[in-house]
Length: 198
Length: 302
Image 1 (spheres, rainbow over the protein chains, first blue to last red):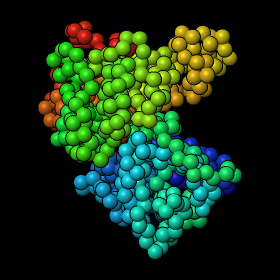
Image 2: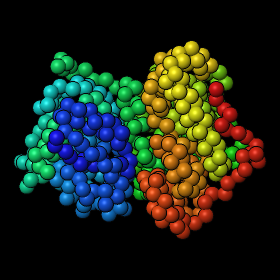
Image 3: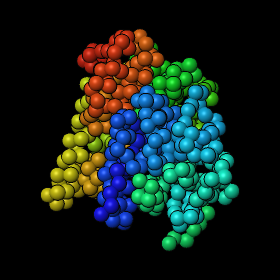
Image 4: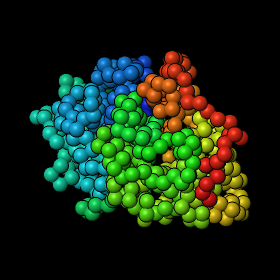
Protein backbone atom coordinates (compact mmCIF):
# COMPACT_ATOMS: atom_id res chain seq x y z
CA UNK A 1 0.00 0.00 0.00
CA UNK A 2 1.24 3.47 -0.88
CA UNK A 3 1.76 5.83 2.00
CA UNK A 4 1.86 9.58 2.52
CA UNK A 5 2.83 11.85 5.38
CA UNK A 6 0.36 14.72 5.46
CA UNK A 7 0.69 17.67 7.82
CA UNK A 8 -2.18 19.85 8.98
CA UNK A 9 -1.07 23.24 10.29
CA UNK A 10 -2.43 22.97 13.83
CA UNK A 11 -1.59 26.29 15.47
CA UNK A 12 -5.18 27.48 15.12
CA UNK A 13 -8.32 26.97 12.99
CA UNK A 14 -10.57 24.12 11.88
CA UNK A 15 -7.88 21.47 12.20
CA UNK A 16 -10.14 18.65 13.39
CA UNK A 17 -12.45 19.01 10.37
CA UNK A 18 -9.48 18.65 8.01
CA UNK A 19 -8.16 15.60 9.83
CA UNK A 20 -11.62 14.01 9.61
CA UNK A 21 -11.82 14.80 5.88
CA UNK A 22 -8.37 13.25 5.32
CA UNK A 23 -9.39 10.12 7.21
CA UNK A 24 -12.55 9.84 5.12
CA UNK A 25 -10.61 10.35 1.88
CA UNK A 26 -8.06 7.70 2.86
CA UNK A 27 -10.72 5.02 3.23
CA UNK A 28 -11.79 5.62 -0.36
CA UNK A 29 -8.27 5.82 -1.78
CA UNK A 30 -6.93 2.69 -0.09
CA UNK A 31 -3.63 4.31 0.84
CA UNK A 32 -2.08 4.74 4.24
CA UNK A 33 -1.63 8.27 5.51
CA UNK A 34 0.27 9.48 8.53
CA UNK A 35 -1.24 12.75 9.76
CA UNK A 36 1.12 15.17 11.49
CA UNK A 37 -0.29 18.09 13.50
CA UNK A 38 2.20 20.80 12.56
CA UNK A 39 3.11 23.31 15.26
CA UNK A 40 6.85 23.86 14.75
CA UNK A 41 9.32 24.21 11.87
CA UNK A 42 10.64 20.76 12.77
CA UNK A 43 7.23 19.20 12.19
CA UNK A 44 7.43 20.28 8.53
CA UNK A 45 10.54 18.29 7.69
CA UNK A 46 9.14 14.89 6.82
CA UNK A 47 5.98 16.01 5.04
CA UNK A 48 4.85 14.95 1.57
CA UNK A 49 1.96 17.39 1.76
CA UNK A 50 0.59 20.15 3.97
CA UNK A 51 -2.93 21.44 4.57
CA UNK A 52 -3.43 25.01 5.81
CA UNK A 53 -6.87 25.13 7.48
CA UNK A 54 -9.50 27.82 7.81
CA UNK A 55 -9.09 30.33 10.60
CA UNK A 56 -7.86 33.89 10.80
CA UNK A 57 -5.18 34.43 8.15
CA UNK A 58 -3.50 37.19 10.17
CA UNK A 59 -3.24 34.96 13.25
CA UNK A 60 -1.97 31.99 11.25
CA UNK A 61 0.65 34.12 9.54
CA UNK A 62 1.90 35.61 12.80
CA UNK A 63 2.12 32.25 14.55
CA UNK A 64 3.97 30.70 11.59
CA UNK A 65 6.41 33.59 11.39
CA UNK A 66 7.09 33.54 15.12
CA UNK A 67 7.99 29.86 14.73
CA UNK A 68 10.24 30.64 11.76
CA UNK A 69 8.16 28.26 9.62
CA UNK A 70 7.70 30.31 6.44
CA UNK A 71 10.83 29.15 4.57
CA UNK A 72 10.26 25.49 5.42
CA UNK A 73 6.58 25.73 4.48
CA UNK A 74 7.61 26.99 1.06
CA UNK A 75 9.63 23.81 0.56
CA UNK A 76 6.68 21.44 1.03
CA UNK A 77 5.88 19.99 -2.41
CA UNK A 78 2.10 19.82 -2.11
CA UNK A 79 0.01 22.39 -0.25
CA UNK A 80 -3.78 22.71 0.05
CA UNK A 81 -5.23 25.85 1.63
CA UNK A 82 -8.89 26.52 2.45
CA UNK A 83 -10.19 30.06 3.15
CA UNK A 84 -7.45 31.55 5.37
CA UNK A 85 -5.16 28.87 3.93
CA UNK A 86 -5.88 30.13 0.40
CA UNK A 87 -4.95 33.65 1.53
CA UNK A 88 -1.65 32.36 2.89
CA UNK A 89 -0.86 30.70 -0.45
CA UNK A 90 -1.64 33.77 -2.59
CA UNK A 91 0.99 35.99 -4.18
CA UNK A 92 -1.15 39.08 -3.61
CA UNK A 93 -3.76 40.01 -1.01
CA UNK A 94 -6.30 42.83 -1.19
CA UNK A 95 -7.54 44.37 2.07
CA UNK A 96 -4.65 42.80 3.89
CA UNK A 97 -4.21 43.79 7.51
CA UNK A 98 -1.19 46.00 8.18
CA UNK A 99 2.06 44.11 7.67
CA UNK A 100 0.27 40.95 6.57
CA UNK A 101 2.56 38.58 4.67
CA UNK A 102 1.85 35.40 2.75
CA UNK A 103 3.87 32.46 1.40
CA UNK A 104 3.48 33.93 -2.15
CA UNK A 105 3.34 30.51 -3.77
CA UNK A 106 0.27 30.64 -6.02
CA UNK A 107 -0.10 33.22 -8.79
CA UNK A 108 -3.46 34.57 -7.60
CA UNK A 109 -4.79 37.72 -6.01
CA UNK A 110 -7.14 37.13 -3.07
CA UNK A 111 -9.53 39.69 -1.59
CA UNK A 112 -9.82 39.13 2.16
CA UNK A 113 -13.32 39.03 3.74
CA UNK A 114 -14.64 40.05 0.32
CA UNK A 115 -18.11 38.66 0.97
CA UNK A 116 -18.47 40.79 4.09
CA UNK A 117 -19.02 40.02 7.76
CA UNK A 118 -20.55 36.92 9.32
CA UNK A 119 -24.15 37.91 8.50
CA UNK A 120 -23.15 37.61 4.83
CA UNK A 121 -21.66 34.14 5.28
CA UNK A 122 -23.58 31.65 3.14
CA UNK A 123 -23.84 28.10 1.92
CA UNK A 124 -24.96 26.95 -1.49
CA UNK A 125 -24.61 24.03 -3.85
CA UNK A 126 -21.84 24.79 -6.33
CA UNK A 127 -20.53 23.12 -9.46
CA UNK A 128 -16.85 22.27 -9.45
CA UNK A 129 -14.54 20.37 -11.79
CA UNK A 130 -14.76 17.61 -9.17
CA UNK A 131 -18.57 17.52 -9.15
CA UNK A 132 -21.36 19.40 -7.38
CA UNK A 133 -21.20 19.93 -3.67
CA UNK A 134 -22.65 22.00 -0.87
CA UNK A 135 -20.10 24.72 -0.15
CA UNK A 136 -19.79 26.73 3.03
CA UNK A 137 -18.44 30.29 2.80
CA UNK A 138 -17.57 31.81 6.18
CA UNK A 139 -16.36 35.42 6.05
CA UNK A 140 -14.83 34.10 2.87
CA UNK A 141 -12.24 35.65 0.56
CA UNK A 142 -12.63 35.95 -3.22
CA UNK A 143 -9.99 35.05 -5.79
CA UNK A 144 -9.89 38.25 -7.85
CA UNK A 145 -7.12 37.39 -10.31
CA UNK A 146 -5.48 34.17 -11.51
CA UNK A 147 -2.17 33.91 -13.36
CA UNK A 148 -1.70 32.07 -16.67
CA UNK A 149 -0.54 28.85 -15.07
CA UNK A 150 -3.51 28.62 -12.71
CA UNK A 151 -6.42 26.33 -13.48
CA UNK A 152 -9.85 27.33 -12.20
CA UNK A 153 -11.70 24.44 -10.49
CA UNK A 154 -14.90 26.17 -9.41
CA UNK A 155 -16.81 29.40 -9.78
CA UNK A 156 -19.69 31.03 -7.92
CA UNK A 157 -21.34 32.90 -10.76
CA UNK A 158 -18.44 34.84 -12.26
CA UNK A 159 -16.29 34.61 -9.13
CA UNK A 160 -13.43 32.14 -8.92
CA UNK A 161 -13.70 30.13 -5.71
CA UNK A 162 -11.29 27.21 -6.25
CA UNK A 163 -8.11 26.79 -8.29
CA UNK A 164 -4.90 24.81 -8.62
CA UNK A 165 -1.41 25.51 -9.85
CA UNK A 166 1.42 23.21 -10.83
CA UNK A 167 4.84 24.85 -10.77
CA UNK A 168 8.12 22.99 -11.22
CA UNK A 169 7.13 19.68 -9.68
CA UNK A 170 5.05 21.34 -7.01
CA UNK A 171 1.30 21.29 -6.58
CA UNK A 172 -0.95 23.87 -4.91
CA UNK A 173 -4.71 23.80 -4.34
CA UNK A 174 -6.72 26.73 -2.98
CA UNK A 175 -10.43 27.13 -2.14
CA UNK A 176 -12.35 30.15 -0.78
CA UNK A 177 -14.90 27.87 0.85
CA UNK A 178 -14.50 25.00 3.33
CA UNK A 179 -14.69 21.63 1.54
CA UNK A 180 -13.58 19.99 4.82
CA UNK A 181 -17.03 20.83 6.16
CA UNK A 182 -19.19 19.06 3.64
CA UNK A 183 -17.20 16.52 1.62
CA UNK A 184 -13.86 14.75 1.26
CA UNK A 185 -13.79 15.13 -2.53
CA UNK A 186 -11.19 17.90 -2.56
CA UNK A 187 -9.06 16.07 0.00
CA UNK A 188 -9.16 12.91 -2.10
CA UNK A 189 -8.15 14.91 -5.17
CA UNK A 190 -5.31 16.59 -3.26
CA UNK A 191 -3.97 13.32 -1.80
CA UNK A 192 -3.94 11.76 -5.28
CA UNK A 193 -1.91 14.69 -6.60
CA UNK A 194 0.43 14.42 -3.63
CA UNK A 195 0.98 10.71 -4.37
CA UNK A 196 2.15 11.63 -7.85
CA UNK A 197 4.43 14.44 -6.69
CA UNK A 198 6.20 13.01 -3.70
CA UNK B 1 -25.01 13.19 -7.63
CA UNK B 2 -27.23 15.88 -6.11
CA UNK B 3 -28.94 18.23 -8.48
CA UNK B 4 -27.13 21.55 -8.31
CA UNK B 5 -29.25 24.45 -7.11
CA UNK B 6 -28.28 28.08 -6.86
CA UNK B 7 -30.21 28.57 -3.64
CA UNK B 8 -28.17 30.68 -1.25
CA UNK B 9 -28.68 30.06 2.46
CA UNK B 10 -27.54 32.44 5.20
CA UNK B 11 -27.76 32.18 8.96
CA UNK B 12 -27.80 28.38 8.99
CA UNK B 13 -26.53 26.58 12.07
CA UNK B 14 -23.65 25.18 10.02
CA UNK B 15 -22.52 28.72 9.19
CA UNK B 16 -22.87 29.81 12.80
CA UNK B 17 -21.03 26.89 14.39
CA UNK B 18 -18.63 27.02 11.44
CA UNK B 19 -17.36 30.46 12.40
CA UNK B 20 -16.84 29.19 15.94
CA UNK B 21 -14.83 26.28 14.48
CA UNK B 22 -12.58 28.75 12.66
CA UNK B 23 -11.74 30.39 16.01
CA UNK B 24 -10.46 27.15 17.57
CA UNK B 25 -6.98 27.30 19.06
CA UNK B 26 -7.31 31.05 19.30
CA UNK B 27 -7.61 33.85 21.82
CA UNK B 28 -10.54 36.31 21.87
CA UNK B 29 -9.74 39.54 23.69
CA UNK B 30 -11.95 42.14 25.40
CA UNK B 31 -11.21 45.61 24.01
CA UNK B 32 -12.74 48.96 24.93
CA UNK B 33 -11.43 51.14 22.08
CA UNK B 34 -9.81 51.06 18.64
CA UNK B 35 -6.30 51.30 20.08
CA UNK B 36 -6.86 48.19 22.23
CA UNK B 37 -8.37 46.41 19.25
CA UNK B 38 -5.23 47.07 17.19
CA UNK B 39 -3.03 45.77 20.01
CA UNK B 40 -5.14 42.62 20.15
CA UNK B 41 -5.00 42.10 16.38
CA UNK B 42 -1.24 42.71 16.26
CA UNK B 43 -0.73 40.18 19.05
CA UNK B 44 -2.57 37.54 16.99
CA UNK B 45 -6.05 37.51 18.55
CA UNK B 46 -8.57 35.59 16.39
CA UNK B 47 -11.38 37.98 17.35
CA UNK B 48 -12.11 40.88 19.69
CA UNK B 49 -15.00 41.48 22.07
CA UNK B 50 -16.04 45.14 21.89
CA UNK B 51 -17.33 46.53 25.18
CA UNK B 52 -17.32 49.79 27.09
CA UNK B 53 -15.67 48.46 30.22
CA UNK B 54 -13.75 45.29 30.92
CA UNK B 55 -15.40 43.07 33.56
CA UNK B 56 -13.14 44.16 36.44
CA UNK B 57 -14.20 47.77 35.81
CA UNK B 58 -17.84 46.73 35.56
CA UNK B 59 -17.40 45.23 39.03
CA UNK B 60 -15.72 48.34 40.36
CA UNK B 61 -18.36 50.67 38.87
CA UNK B 62 -21.39 48.79 40.12
CA UNK B 63 -24.84 49.73 38.79
CA UNK B 64 -26.54 48.18 35.77
CA UNK B 65 -24.20 47.04 32.97
CA UNK B 66 -25.75 47.18 29.48
CA UNK B 67 -24.91 46.70 25.81
CA UNK B 68 -22.19 49.07 24.54
CA UNK B 69 -22.77 52.24 22.52
CA UNK B 70 -23.11 51.32 18.81
CA UNK B 71 -20.68 54.10 17.93
CA UNK B 72 -17.98 52.47 20.03
CA UNK B 73 -18.66 49.08 18.42
CA UNK B 74 -18.48 50.61 14.92
CA UNK B 75 -15.18 52.27 15.80
CA UNK B 76 -13.71 48.89 16.65
CA UNK B 77 -15.21 47.27 13.54
CA UNK B 78 -13.43 49.81 11.37
CA UNK B 79 -10.13 49.48 13.27
CA UNK B 80 -9.56 45.75 12.72
CA UNK B 81 -10.12 43.07 10.07
CA UNK B 82 -10.65 40.13 12.46
CA UNK B 83 -14.17 39.23 13.69
CA UNK B 84 -15.77 41.61 16.18
CA UNK B 85 -18.05 40.26 18.92
CA UNK B 86 -20.24 42.24 21.31
CA UNK B 87 -22.27 41.50 24.43
CA UNK B 88 -25.95 41.82 25.15
CA UNK B 89 -27.75 41.21 28.44
CA UNK B 90 -29.21 37.77 29.14
CA UNK B 91 -32.72 37.67 27.67
CA UNK B 92 -32.47 41.14 26.13
CA UNK B 93 -33.40 40.23 22.58
CA UNK B 94 -33.70 43.84 21.45
CA UNK B 95 -30.08 44.54 22.39
CA UNK B 96 -29.30 41.42 20.33
CA UNK B 97 -31.33 42.78 17.40
CA UNK B 98 -29.33 46.00 17.60
CA UNK B 99 -26.04 44.08 17.58
CA UNK B 100 -27.25 42.06 14.60
CA UNK B 101 -28.19 45.30 12.80
CA UNK B 102 -24.64 46.50 13.46
CA UNK B 103 -23.34 43.32 11.77
CA UNK B 104 -21.21 42.17 14.66
CA UNK B 105 -19.80 38.71 13.86
CA UNK B 106 -20.85 37.02 17.13
CA UNK B 107 -23.19 38.03 19.97
CA UNK B 108 -22.27 37.08 23.53
CA UNK B 109 -25.42 36.75 25.64
CA UNK B 110 -23.43 37.46 28.73
CA UNK B 111 -23.77 37.21 32.48
CA UNK B 112 -21.11 39.95 32.72
CA UNK B 113 -23.89 42.41 31.91
CA UNK B 114 -26.90 42.76 34.21
CA UNK B 115 -29.55 40.20 33.17
CA UNK B 116 -32.73 41.56 31.58
CA UNK B 117 -34.83 38.42 31.98
CA UNK B 118 -34.71 35.99 34.90
CA UNK B 119 -36.78 33.33 33.19
CA UNK B 120 -35.83 33.23 29.53
CA UNK B 121 -32.64 33.43 27.55
CA UNK B 122 -32.83 34.74 23.97
CA UNK B 123 -34.28 32.43 21.27
CA UNK B 124 -31.08 32.44 19.31
CA UNK B 125 -32.27 30.48 16.28
CA UNK B 126 -34.31 33.55 15.26
CA UNK B 127 -31.09 35.39 14.43
CA UNK B 128 -28.67 35.29 11.49
CA UNK B 129 -25.78 36.34 13.74
CA UNK B 130 -24.36 33.47 15.82
CA UNK B 131 -24.42 33.50 19.63
CA UNK B 132 -21.95 32.40 22.27
CA UNK B 133 -23.24 31.77 25.80
CA UNK B 134 -21.67 31.03 29.15
CA UNK B 135 -22.23 27.79 31.06
CA UNK B 136 -21.13 26.34 34.38
CA UNK B 137 -22.10 22.76 33.71
CA UNK B 138 -23.38 20.42 31.00
CA UNK B 139 -27.06 21.11 31.64
CA UNK B 140 -26.59 24.84 31.25
CA UNK B 141 -24.51 24.34 28.07
CA UNK B 142 -27.15 22.06 26.53
CA UNK B 143 -29.99 24.44 27.36
CA UNK B 144 -28.13 27.22 25.56
CA UNK B 145 -27.43 24.96 22.56
CA UNK B 146 -31.14 24.05 22.47
CA UNK B 147 -31.93 27.76 22.26
CA UNK B 148 -29.60 28.01 19.27
CA UNK B 149 -26.19 28.94 20.72
CA UNK B 150 -23.43 28.10 18.23
CA UNK B 151 -20.61 28.32 20.75
CA UNK B 152 -20.24 27.77 24.48
CA UNK B 153 -17.77 29.24 26.92
CA UNK B 154 -17.32 28.62 30.60
CA UNK B 155 -18.61 31.41 32.78
CA UNK B 156 -15.64 31.32 35.11
CA UNK B 157 -15.73 34.43 37.27
CA UNK B 158 -15.23 37.40 34.97
CA UNK B 159 -13.07 40.26 36.17
CA UNK B 160 -11.73 38.28 39.12
CA UNK B 161 -8.30 37.46 37.65
CA UNK B 162 -8.84 34.11 39.38
CA UNK B 163 -8.84 30.96 37.24
CA UNK B 164 -10.42 28.67 39.82
CA UNK B 165 -14.04 29.07 38.66
CA UNK B 166 -13.22 28.51 34.98
CA UNK B 167 -11.36 25.33 35.93
CA UNK B 168 -14.33 24.19 37.99
CA UNK B 169 -16.68 24.79 35.07
CA UNK B 170 -14.45 22.97 32.56
CA UNK B 171 -14.18 19.97 34.87
CA UNK B 172 -17.85 19.95 35.76
CA UNK B 173 -18.84 19.99 32.09
CA UNK B 174 -16.39 17.22 31.30
CA UNK B 175 -17.60 14.96 34.07
CA UNK B 176 -21.14 15.56 32.83
CA UNK B 177 -20.12 14.48 29.33
CA UNK B 178 -18.18 11.48 30.66
CA UNK B 179 -21.31 10.38 32.51
CA UNK B 180 -23.32 10.43 29.28
CA UNK B 181 -20.64 8.50 27.37
CA UNK B 182 -20.55 5.90 30.13
CA UNK B 183 -24.34 5.54 30.19
CA UNK B 184 -24.45 5.09 26.43
CA UNK B 185 -21.78 2.38 26.62
CA UNK B 186 -23.86 0.61 29.25
CA UNK B 187 -26.95 1.13 27.07
CA UNK B 188 -28.67 2.75 30.04
CA UNK B 189 -31.36 4.52 28.03
CA UNK B 190 -33.54 5.11 31.05
CA UNK B 191 -30.89 7.12 32.89
CA UNK B 192 -30.03 9.06 29.72
CA UNK B 193 -33.70 9.99 29.35
CA UNK B 194 -33.81 10.96 33.00
CA UNK B 195 -30.80 13.25 32.56
CA UNK B 196 -32.39 14.83 29.47
CA UNK B 197 -35.40 15.69 31.64
CA UNK B 198 -33.16 16.94 34.43
CA UNK B 199 -31.24 19.15 31.98
CA UNK B 200 -34.53 20.26 30.38
CA UNK B 201 -33.32 19.39 26.86
CA UNK B 202 -34.27 16.80 24.26
CA UNK B 203 -33.15 13.19 24.53
CA UNK B 204 -31.73 13.52 20.99
CA UNK B 205 -29.33 16.23 22.12
CA UNK B 206 -28.20 14.18 25.13
CA UNK B 207 -27.67 11.18 22.87
CA UNK B 208 -25.68 13.28 20.41
CA UNK B 209 -23.29 14.41 23.16
CA UNK B 210 -22.98 10.83 24.43
CA UNK B 211 -22.01 9.66 20.94
CA UNK B 212 -19.60 12.52 20.23
CA UNK B 213 -18.01 12.49 23.68
CA UNK B 214 -17.93 16.29 23.52
CA UNK B 215 -20.31 19.20 23.08
CA UNK B 216 -21.71 19.48 19.54
CA UNK B 217 -20.33 23.05 19.37
CA UNK B 218 -17.00 24.66 20.19
CA UNK B 219 -16.30 25.22 23.89
CA UNK B 220 -13.96 28.01 25.03
CA UNK B 221 -12.70 28.93 28.49
CA UNK B 222 -13.58 32.34 29.89
CA UNK B 223 -13.66 34.18 33.18
CA UNK B 224 -10.53 34.79 35.24
CA UNK B 225 -7.72 34.03 32.77
CA UNK B 226 -4.84 36.35 33.71
CA UNK B 227 -1.57 34.69 32.64
CA UNK B 228 -0.16 32.69 29.70
CA UNK B 229 -0.05 29.65 31.99
CA UNK B 230 -3.73 30.12 32.95
CA UNK B 231 -4.64 30.06 29.26
CA UNK B 232 -2.55 26.95 28.56
CA UNK B 233 -4.02 25.24 31.65
CA UNK B 234 -7.51 25.63 30.21
CA UNK B 235 -6.30 24.32 26.84
CA UNK B 236 -4.65 21.27 28.43
CA UNK B 237 -7.89 20.64 30.30
CA UNK B 238 -9.50 20.31 26.89
CA UNK B 239 -11.18 23.56 25.82
CA UNK B 240 -11.00 24.70 22.20
CA UNK B 241 -9.72 28.23 22.87
CA UNK B 242 -9.90 31.07 25.38
CA UNK B 243 -11.51 34.43 26.01
CA UNK B 244 -9.40 36.91 27.94
CA UNK B 245 -11.28 39.83 29.43
CA UNK B 246 -9.62 42.05 31.99
CA UNK B 247 -6.45 39.92 31.97
CA UNK B 248 -4.77 41.78 29.12
CA UNK B 249 -5.58 45.44 29.49
CA UNK B 250 -5.40 45.37 33.29
CA UNK B 251 -1.89 43.91 33.19
CA UNK B 252 1.17 46.16 33.43
CA UNK B 253 2.17 45.43 29.80
CA UNK B 254 -0.87 44.65 27.61
CA UNK B 255 1.12 44.22 24.36
CA UNK B 256 3.45 41.62 25.83
CA UNK B 257 0.71 39.90 27.80
CA UNK B 258 -1.54 39.67 24.73
CA UNK B 259 1.17 38.13 22.58
CA UNK B 260 2.32 35.79 25.38
CA UNK B 261 -1.22 34.45 25.82
CA UNK B 262 -1.66 33.93 22.06
CA UNK B 263 1.63 32.03 21.87
CA UNK B 264 0.82 29.94 24.94
CA UNK B 265 -2.55 28.90 23.53
CA UNK B 266 -1.06 27.95 20.13
CA UNK B 267 1.64 25.90 21.90
CA UNK B 268 -0.34 24.86 24.97
CA UNK B 269 1.38 21.49 25.26
CA UNK B 270 4.90 22.88 25.05
CA UNK B 271 6.03 24.06 28.51
CA UNK B 272 9.31 25.44 27.15
CA UNK B 273 7.42 27.71 24.78
CA UNK B 274 5.03 28.77 27.56
CA UNK B 275 8.05 29.56 29.75
CA UNK B 276 9.58 31.65 26.98
CA UNK B 277 6.30 33.47 26.34
CA UNK B 278 5.82 34.15 30.07
CA UNK B 279 9.26 35.69 30.51
CA UNK B 280 9.32 39.35 31.47
CA UNK B 281 5.68 40.07 30.60
CA UNK B 282 5.38 42.34 33.63
CA UNK B 283 2.72 42.12 36.29
CA UNK B 284 -0.52 40.28 35.68
CA UNK B 285 -3.78 41.94 36.69
CA UNK B 286 -4.39 41.99 40.41
CA UNK B 287 -6.69 39.07 41.14
CA UNK B 288 -9.22 38.55 43.87
CA UNK B 289 -10.24 35.67 46.07
CA UNK B 290 -13.64 34.46 44.89
CA UNK B 291 -14.94 34.58 48.48
CA UNK B 292 -14.07 38.30 48.62
CA UNK B 293 -16.27 39.19 45.64
CA UNK B 294 -19.49 41.07 46.31
CA UNK B 295 -21.21 39.90 43.13
CA UNK B 296 -20.89 36.44 41.64
CA UNK B 297 -21.48 36.97 37.92
CA UNK B 298 -21.45 33.23 37.17
CA UNK B 299 -24.68 32.65 39.07
CA UNK B 300 -26.60 34.83 36.60
CA UNK B 301 -28.69 32.93 34.04
CA UNK B 302 -30.50 29.62 34.28
